[in-house]
Length: 287
Ligand SMILES: Nc1ncnc2c1ncn2[C@@H]1O[C@H](COP(=O)(O)OP(=O)(O)OP(=O)(O)O)[C@@H](O)[C@H]1O
Image (cartoon, rainbow, N blue to C red; front, side):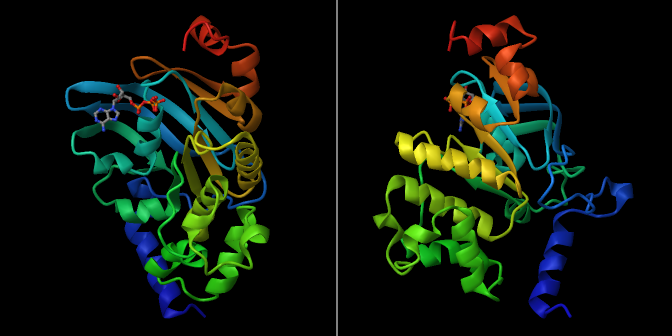
């Protein structure tokens, strides 16, 4: 029987997105975990983003498949991070940002008036460029989201599982009470990933998650991303084209002016892109 807490969680989910198909409701039948379905989970249609008078993204049409890794690449300032932040409405926190067009998550426009951004971010978590653990213990970092959502049943087990999924458990299991700030940069980033997945999101957004790390820590994060995609949809912004080629299934190439120039299977983008501009970018003719 559902506990009061579970019932409240379900009510919270319902308040995020209507499940009434007549209102463009959420497809709750979508697979969770396991098989790579290729089904679209995030869909942008004619998406424009402005910062004040400046347009950062232009008419972006993009379908991101479920349980795969989608990479966003392109030169500095082309709008990759802006697109990523649209997905879980982090751009709401920037006063001058304005979004037009549609961005849907499981068929529901996340910019509809009835969507609660906080509830949305529980389902679409984020990991940032610089590891940003809280100045708390390793345990309390992972517990944080669980506590704020009153998901405290079996918390020790959930924390252990999250740290295992983030490939950090063996390194921290005997020091869970120590400060997260005493971990190395790579360990801190894996802790941030454990914190993001502890609350069981469906999508994990990553904004250059390895760019502040050394090659060994980078390689650990890349391995981890591949493993996470068995259970989660991962969307990653990276400056590193080799990294995109190594870990992603799909690649979106944005170019200056906030234009999405090509989106396809990663192999196709790197071996035989349709666009000359993409080929020039991939081969380093400009950057
Ligand atoms: N908070 C902001 N206020 C004003 N303009 C912004 C803001 N954030 C981004 N921009 C502008 O929007 C455009 C796209 O920036 P964005 O950070 O999305 O690009 P990016 O491709 O992720 O760049 P980088 O690879 O350098 O991180 C740039 O022209 C940038 O100056």
